[in-house]
Image (tube, rainbow, N blue to C red):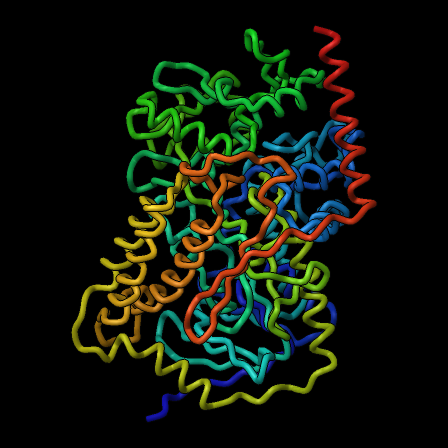
Length: 617
């Protein structure tokens, strides 16, 4: 028996309404394409809002020595040399224009006394580079893009979950979705589809992501025949709330550390100085213009004066350091570390970090102007994602594009803080532009009813089982398992065990029963999410097992390894064949000669400044 569904026709459909999706839809509509956004949640609920610290772009407002070459160098170095260098080049060169564009569209960035956009420092960036709006930068960007999108005439479908991509041969021709409130089915014909669905971190039990982050876009691409890469690289943000349990994992912006926040263990020791890599000390022992946000420390017998606090080391280093302190028995009472910004004073904190002050006051009963926060690593961001063409953002499947966190390439093994927001606007624009350009030359695809009915049949299957396990129990157990076995520190035996567990979770998911109603049924939504979460967790685990080294966001306790630029430079590529996930390794493509020269130029500049500083001490 056929199910009823409603049909829609568009030139370009964007799945996701975060920063990348909105920017793609705006560019598509500006190019003349009839454009729609389909979002699983509500407008304004995007995870872009969590990017509180700032948007990285070499505007040169804070330091005239900055520029695209330095930003490119920092991104490549932060990625442990695994980033797609073409994407890193586009990003570094285009981010300033995209930020200025946001300003023209009404984004109210913090200003310097000279009335230019203010920029703060962040982990892994050579110079202060993050354009910010207090500690609510992502929120301001979403507000600006939403207002701009309204004026472009974009249609928006809220609380629709896309479960299937329609195809004709190797070309995507639309998608099938259901409404989360009523359970009605909808089929969309599209000449181009842009995935902008965000990340996968809901697969872990301690995460900064909300309920939406279940890897939908990654799975849709995998099921449609696209390739995924770098999926072993999951960034555990060093600072998420750890207490009370109801807020475990909620993000504490890196801006707290950028404004001078100090990490302390239970013995009140500022432990990050014990984890400073020699290379960081060599690169950053330099004189920087004095400011109250810089902390000057002398580490006896090891480093020169470092005027860049070690709390601003890259996220993987800081997260592992906190994890090490906890394992050594020096953690905070609830399994984290203390982050103290109180020395800055209430006035500065309310001016610079108002959202953080409010968050801890309301959710944890902590006044951060007077006492430290309790923080710990939280699964925050996946560097891996769908393989895309650097210039167009098209995937390996024709007509399917991806941008933002669902796409791979820019961040390699580790993402620098602030690069996510500039990633969204740079590659969101490119995806929307090229999706619309391709759509202009195509006829409207017809909706294949047999594909739609097959997708609907798969969606309603859990409701027709009559009996079975509660999907919520499977969902929670799987997240706990991923946290335990595929978490911040990994070993072969646990990864192999995780793959066996995932096979079991897959079988349990196929026999679970959420009840019979399609209306307001969160259990049904979880039953469906289990499929993508199992498949994407498998991809991440297989990639983690295949990478026998520690690099960036991927730490193998059984393969400590190095992280220099000449070692272990392979990429893990995953795809699906006849329902089975496959994996292969490919070497990283050698970087273009002129970009090699740009990297060397920046390295020489950093080394020269370090030598000058060494002579002063």
